[in-house]
Length: 315
Image 1 (tube, rainbow, N blue to C red):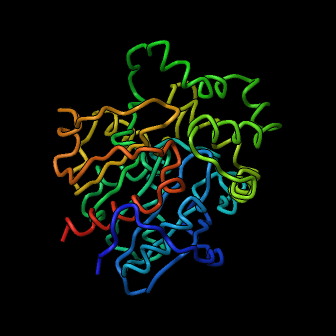
Image 2: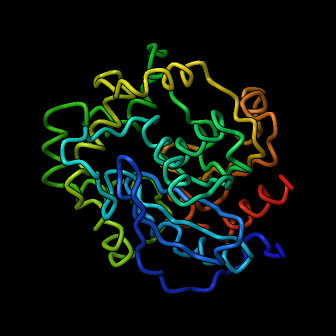
């Protein structure tokens, strides 16, 4: 069934209509591909992007016999909060809970998770804390679970330079800038984080519609302030954040992918002892030459191959 080779070209497929499922907090929008009886794969995008990140990956997975869901995260249109008075938070525990709520709403008892950036973190948390639900994981970025309870070490100047946007979003000027210039900021990040990727304005504009959500600015600002311990989280997630601060192992079969040419810097070439400790069932770890931050868009075939490899390793 799983005969796709790494790097093979993917056929373009029309994006299915948007479906919506209601959870206790969100009306979660998604695109669904594949047979309803097939094993599910939940595909999670990052910032700043949307579910179109998987518009080549998802149909390829469906052709390989899986059921793929490309999900719009909280804060990204057309996903919406059910309650107008609900806090527009986006801490890591909330995004991970959204994945579980999404699966529960659709009756998905077990599933594969795949994500990058925000989506990688959510997928990693669900895998670490709920291994009974996750059959396998593809994490583009590796172990990105954060300690939001105790302060970490002081960052070196090079890391601070790359993370400028996080500190910008912790200022009043950053809130105003994101509100008034969100497309300009996000377009710059696309170019800066994936410098070798020659994306079109059509591609960017299709994703940027998600940034027009009335919840986008509040969710983005909360995400980056909460991880900096500059914003309170929801009380219901205090226990979860404490668990995450202890660096739980991700004990499901996992494939790690890194864009070798990411604007965030090149990942280590060799798998480190810390990574082997964090991933006791590590299946594979690969650096993808020519890819930057937006790996599913830049190298979709490698992502498809990784999902199939992770899934097959768990049988």
